[in-house]
Length: 145
Image (cartoon, rainbow, N blue to C red; front, side, top):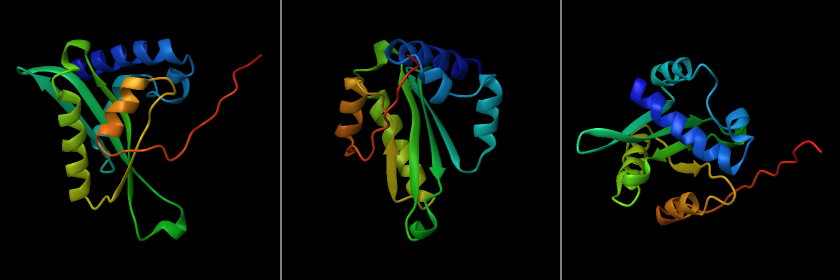
């Protein structure tokens, strides 16, 4: 659990530098340890740890989400969090985590996938586009004056 929390804190630093609203609306509820315990026990959640030479260097968290009542003939999972440490970004750890997660969720009956990416985070956008994702929705935000 400590490595997962450490990786999450690194993700929080990176995302907060891009958008100060991220830890308030897009991250995990504090205490993070409790949030991870809850996710690990949730049958609709998936957490994947990425390793390099046996060391944890990244993680991915996905959630099976309910659609509107008229969406009963399809299923959706959302990749809510994905992070790899800087040295592991160019060697395929993220891609391996993404493809493993999609494969596991397909086994659970999921057909469609969303991924959450901050505006301006070009590397994350490119990462998901390389995996066949494209924009479906954009959330607009107005900070206080």
